[in-house]
Length: 431
Image (cartoon, rainbow, N blue to C red):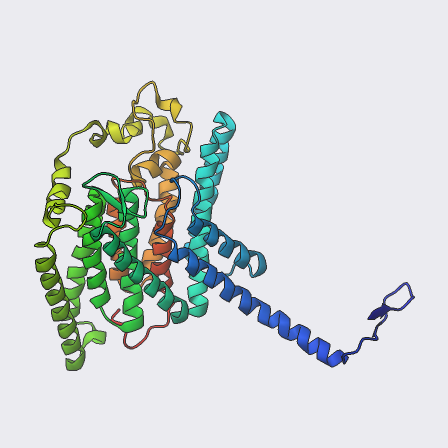
C-alpha cells in the first residue's frame, strides 16, 4: 500500500507493502524498458501475419481484407505506443504528398459530399503509414525481419503458382485465372512487387541473384495465367533490368566486383539460372494444363493476342484518359477522386481512370504529381545501387495501364527498396 502525507504539499510517499521498495523500482524500470521492445516485436509479427494473408482476398474488392485489418492493427500498436522516428527524407516528402491529398479530398468532399473522396484519401494514408512502419521495423530489426519477409513472399509465390497450375484457384474466365485474388490485374500487381521484394531480400541475405531469377520464373507462370497485359509489360521491364544487371555484374569494373573468386561465383550462379530457366521452360511449355485441355503455351499465345484487342475499354476514352483534355481546369490542382458524375456530359466512362500516372495528374494535378515525384526521387537518391530502384520500373510501367497507386503492395515494395539504403552492407551482398 502507498500512503500520501496529509500535508497540502506532497513531501513524501510511504510504502507499507510486502515487497522491498528497491525491488519494485527495478521491476518497474525493467517492465517499462521491456515494453517498447515487446511492442515493436508484436507489431512486427502482426505485420508479418498480414503479409501471409496478403494474397488471399476473402470478399469483394473495395473493402478492407483480413490482411489490411491486421496491418492496421500493427500500425496502430506501433505508432500509439512507440511513435514515429526520423527515417530519412522520403518520409518527409511522403507526408507532404499525403497532406496535399487530404486538402484536395476535403475540398471536393465538402463540394460534392461523395464519401469515396474521403475513403480514397484514407487508403493513401493507410498505405503511407504501412510504408513508414516497414521502414522503421527494418531499420530496427534488419536481417531478422527481412529474412521472414523474404521467406513469406517466396513461399506464397510458389503456392500461387501451384494453385494456378493445378486449378486450385478462382476463374474470371477460362483464359484468365486469379488464384485467390479478385482480379487478374490485382494479382499481377502483387506478383511484380513480390519479385522485387524477393530479389532485394535474397540479395541482401544470401548475396545471390539466383532468387531474382527464380522469382521471375514463377512470375512468368502467374502472369501467364492472369493474362494481364499490364502485368506482362511490367514483367518484361523487370526482366530487362535483371539481364542488364547480370551483364553489369559480369563485365562491370566496380572495385567491389573485382577478384577472380567473386567473378567465378557470379559466373556459376548465372549459368545455374540460365539452365534452370531453359530446363523449366522446355518442360513447362510442353505439358498439358492441369486445369483444362489447353496447352500452357496456348495461354501465353492468348496473352499476346490480347494486345491486339480493340474493344471499347481498350481506347483512351474507354479507360478514362480523355478527362485530361476534356476537363483541363483540373490539371494544375486536381479534381479529387469520386463524384465522377461531374464528367458525364463529355465522357461515357465514369469509372476509375485506368492509369496510375494519368489518374494522379487528373485527381491531384501537376502539383500532386510533382510532390509524389519528390517522394520517389528521394527513394531513388537514397539507394546507392540504382538497379534496386530500377526494378520498380516494372510496376511503374504496369501503372501506365492500370491504377495501382492505391494498392498497398505498391507502398510495401517501395518501403523495401527504400529500407535497403540504410541496411548494413554485408560483404556477401552483391549490391
